[in-house]
Length: 279
Image 1 (tube, helix red, strand yellow):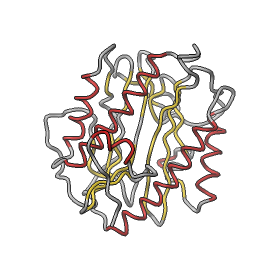
Image 2 (tube, helix red, strand yellow):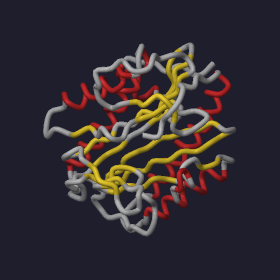
Image 3 (spheres, one colour):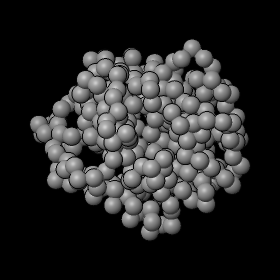
């Protein structure tokens, strides 16, 4: 919802800086996810993330962005996105979304993960919440795989929607108000990256393009409200939600997932896509 202006095409050196930022971000999210658990506050996760990126010389891109007060967005259960980290204590069975980013040499990274606290096998989590997260994550990788060969950005949303709507079981809603975006010298840039088929081709895919692809799925209605803090987005019906996100680039030799340590190889390989390191 923030992206505006021309589409920025990066050089290999600029993409390499984004890849460095992405590696740091991946490690910071690993640390925050590892720290998440019952009895931990979302503010404590914010501190873990902040300490990790700061120790590695990266700057935050969420902190003070349009006045946002945290290093991460920490959204729980019906909170879809942009949750402010603070004194909320996490509980067994919560569905936590951690969304973060950082900057290296002026180049941005952005990524998000969903964590279901507990396990349905142990009776401490709802299996439908686990299914929600699993399908959202898998949909993200279908969108990334589509980007590998896409001629237009609109093909990403088509691939995500096709996957989500093909899954057996209770139907899941794809949020339409909040979408992915271009990324590079700023965190939110053109083009918008829809997570559903719009009937439009969208921008032409070119080498040097970097996108943050981030499907957000809900177990109920896709209608949302904004809380009084003017940041936290919640489902109107209180249904739980999931968000998964990666920053990804297309360079002259192929695709590379900037916020995955292996460039996306483990998840793209089964989908028939081999990521190629930035030259």
